[in-house]
Length: 413
Image (cartoon, rainbow, N blue to C red; front, side, top):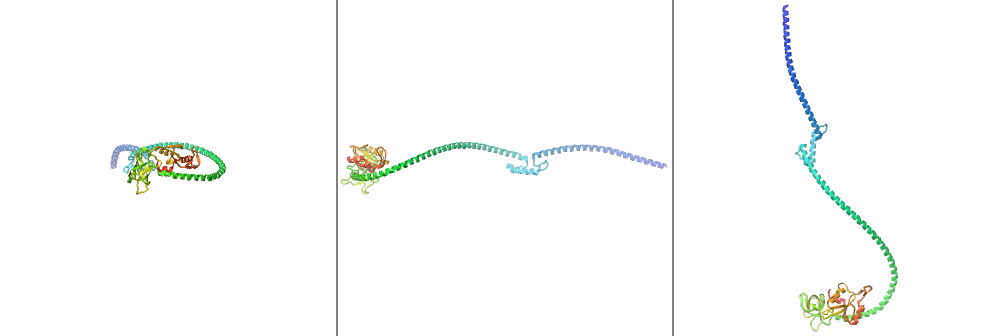
């Protein structure tokens, strides 16, 4: 029985020790666990703090990314920028702005280039706008000029229309007046036609009556011409003689000059100076008058083997170197041989032109047919100056009659 009690006591002690050891171990574990727990709690707190900071940072980064995406764009979905879209946008920007080269990789590098390109374009636009403004001013000025010209043309057109209307009115009045005059003229023509027919019968009778008288007059004038022509072609005395001849040049000198009032352009018949002959050799024309002699040019040579020589004589039927003469001009004178020119020529040679025939008249110059009377009124039919009473009186008085053709032959105006 005693062994059992000691054995039980030993077991109790053992269990007590075991319990005590377990208690001590548990106590140690408690203390150990309590320190690690504090460390874990501190680490947890530190970790939670770091996580909070990371969350704040992540939240701020997310907000920045969203803000940048909102500014940057290129968002396919959500609120973030799509890198692929951004890259394609950068490529499109390079294609749209030639100044952005391939070396530009970021939008940050693109911005100054784009700004400069925009500034250049803005300057170009400003320049073009200035040019447009200048052109607009020019256009406005041109439009104003066009409007002014248009207004002026419109005014002129209106004035021309008014003038045309006035002219049309005058033309209408003139037409009516002419038609009235035509009607009156037709009536007058009828009356005058009857008178004309009667006059024709009278004229025919008068023509038959005067035909005989005219034929007789022409016969007398022809006879007178034949009597007077020798005086024209073969004068009674020479007017001068040839002093010298330059045969090769057809030039010569005659002994008639300024003292005899010889005009330049006077022509002379050149006859042989040999005695016993009156052979005509040529014509000569005065080209220069110097002192008592004159230079002449020879023309119309009769015989090429008998040229004018020194000593030959010259004459002009209308030129008289020895005294003054008087003449009467009858007929029409015009053109190169107008009456004032002929009078000037004759006056220069000492020939006085008379207004009427008298005893001092030496010759009569007969011109062309006359179409007006002495008072300048037109004649129904021209009058032959041969039929003029002054010519008939001059012939009866014995005056020399010189035809206009003879004047042309012996003087060049």
